[in-house]
Image 1 (cartoon, helix red, strand yellow):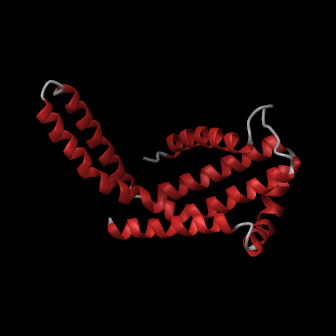
Image 2: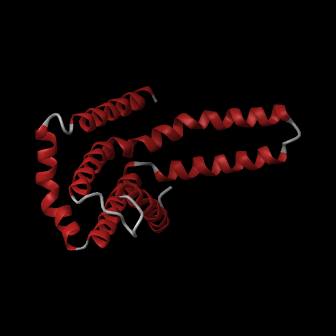
Length: 176
């Protein structure tokens, strides 16, 4: 877990530095704009709402696929089943605090395993995600911060629809 946590911290620090230096080092933003303006920018120019919905779906699909194929799905499924069994056991022993504590201890023992399994996709997606968010921020600021459906900012629109798409795609693609 130490190696995985160390890698995650490096990726998070690099992501934060990129986000903070976006306006300070024009090379970063110019490169991202050069890559995304002809693709995602074009899609947004066709129809802002439908285009952003499509881009949100595409990003969610890609991150879900990364999650599916960079994690051990069988091990995650087994850990979730174990957690569910522990929860059920805890419900049966609500009158026995020592038994509940013992079961909670077992739950916490699984945390490092779950963390190691679920952290890997973040290593691949964190930096591109930060670059996309910063690009969206620039694009929508230049468009006068439009409201989707009359009241949603681009960030809330993205969060809500990425959650919806994530739920649907995880079911369809059987991602644990």
